[in-house]
Image (cartoon, rainbow, N blue to C red; front, top):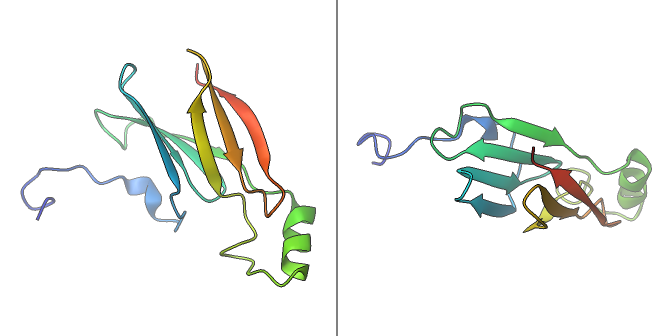
Length: 111
């Protein structure tokens, strides 16, 4: 109904089955950060599909292998699911992911 009434703009970057996990809305700068499976997206709130920036941040291959050896599912559990997107200061966001059961954290400069 929303599409038919022109009341929404679908985000076209989600065709990869990325399993979106967390969102961070930055109204001041008109941006939306999305944490997903092995990816972080930075979207423009005016047009979600314009100038989409994407960071590919997978778990280390050796951590994925250890995860699979532990009997976990390679597709649904042994990845870097981004769980935390937290503003750090005006230029950086603190991010954490599961890292295939070996958590990873870091800072992203939004620039």
